[in-house]
Image: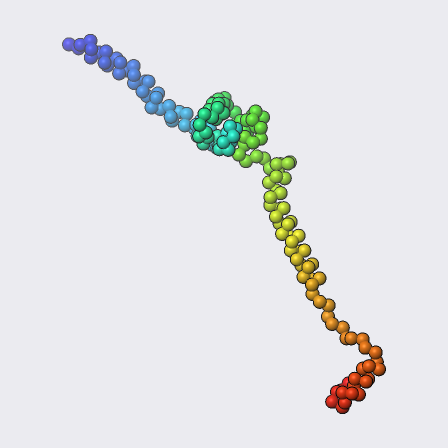
Length: 164
């Protein structure tokens, strides 16, 4: 004879089995979504002022990162593309939310100036030094222009040892 206690234990185990199975499989069901959220979160900055990547913000009491991550998860769950999600965050929080802003317009100039300015300065210094060196080089010595009678007198006094 089967006791009531043993049937309750079996029926409880049978009811708990699907719950345990869903909990065990839940990381695998949402793994692709969380990987995508992590990848997108690494392309954004937290706007709390900590200057850290969104997924790595460890600022104590940060009121932005949790909301931003929730919003990111919601948009991924809706099925928005990566670019649409990034653009919506840019519209909401400004261009500083993106780790690598687009290199067009003024932003492109900001990326270009730190490269071009030192090269231009180096060229200008090189050109300045080159011109200073040319100016400092003495001109070739020209023959002194003495009057003819002084040259003749010097030759006569020097005697026959000198040749013309």
